[in-house]
Length: 220
Image 1 (cartoon, rainbow, N blue to C red):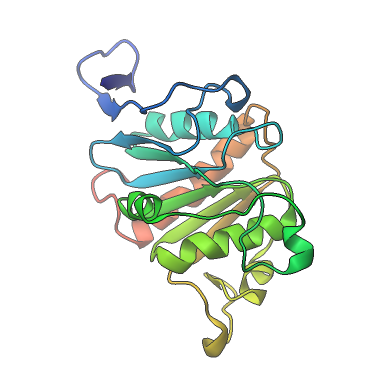
Image 2 (tube, rainbow, N blue to C red; image 1 turned 180 degrees about the horizontal axis):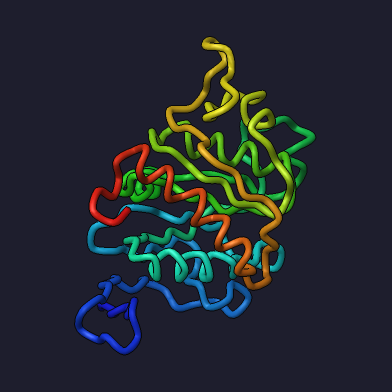
């Protein structure tokens, strides 16, 4: 099934997006976003937005606002809702993992993330979880990434656990990722609409990266 996404109301037929609908129905607590393990695919994706698994604590509604804002900027965007997007990865320290579920990505999800050229990773409000989730994904995905979270994190937090970043780099022998954290936007509250100020900040971070990595040649 396909959906037309109208980017310029009033000019139907001139600027539209084709988005393949997800395989699963939406969840109310996720702000209408699809169930875990589902994927919405654009025709020629520039960007993929990776969402947490929706649930009582992981309310992913900001992803809908972010995706809509990017499409209004004429960016082709895929959206992946992780199947195991809660908790911390098994290789995180014991005090970080606790007794909750284990975070992980499977081969199918890795290939879906690799289908785009720029990755946006939306995570939650536990600082240590954010850091190790990002490390797990970028271990297998050689792409620049923008991290969006509720918890405040910085480039040093990622570099300390072996994640390459644009501004702080781990020692060569400590590097554990193929991908690189290129930008960070914190203070995006899960379960609430993403304020326009934050959407503007996200877009302001994306545009220079698109130019730097030569992702979208004709639009900027």
